[in-house]
Image 1: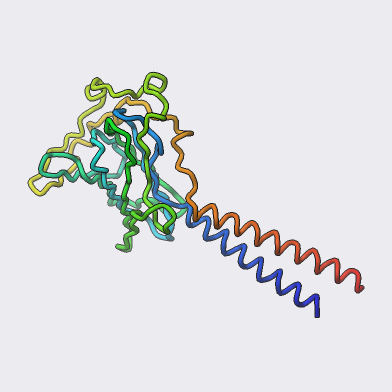
Image 2: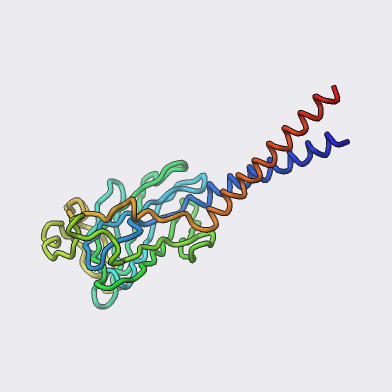
Amino acid sequence: MINKFVFRIAAVCSSVAAGLLIFSGLASAHVTVQPGVSSPGAWETYSIKVPVEKDIPTVKVSLKIPAELDFKQYRPIPDWEVELTKNESGKVTVVTWNTEEEGIEPGEFQQFEFVGKNPEGEVSLAWDAFQYYSDGSIVEWSGEEGTDKPHSITKVTQEATSGAEDGHAADPGHASQGHDTGVEAGSGGAGSAEGAGENGTGGNAGTADEAAGENGASTIEITTMVLSAAALLVSLAALWAAIRSRSKVS
């Protein structure tokens, strides 16, 4: 009777641990923007990382540019077209990458890079992203930290590595070092990236210390990992107790 009860507890704990581990893996597959920390006034090279959560490809990604950031240039990616949406003043508000090819397949991820000029003051830049799958479904990465679909945050702060050390102090000269995107503002606010093939590498601006810029695991990710580890330990202990109990009986 005791053995059956112990084995039942072990089975339940193992199932819980497996479920939490799977959930933790899904929760970590976020669309993220790096670096997570940058300096005020810096010409920063940002990178948006797009993993695929579903068993179908991602064929389009839209990123809202924070109002405080001045978008400058993007790095062209083979088979991906870029569309820049601008407001009435000509400021880029949304960048969209889309492809007519296979896209980002399940088990893969893609990174898209662009250069932006940070605001002079300290601020947290929220990156709302929209991931489009081949079946027409859209995943909105626009929630607060701790939610299922959080947006990435970049903290623009004086505490970031100084531009003198890492090479990305605010320098108007960077504008001439990169290549123009070849996009004119459309009357509807959206322009097509016709000059993508002529773009350079997206500018030579250095990046902030990426180690310091890694976004920390969100609260929900840490919690699920801790709970899954605890459940796994409990299940192992229960199995060990059951085995010892059976060996004594025999």
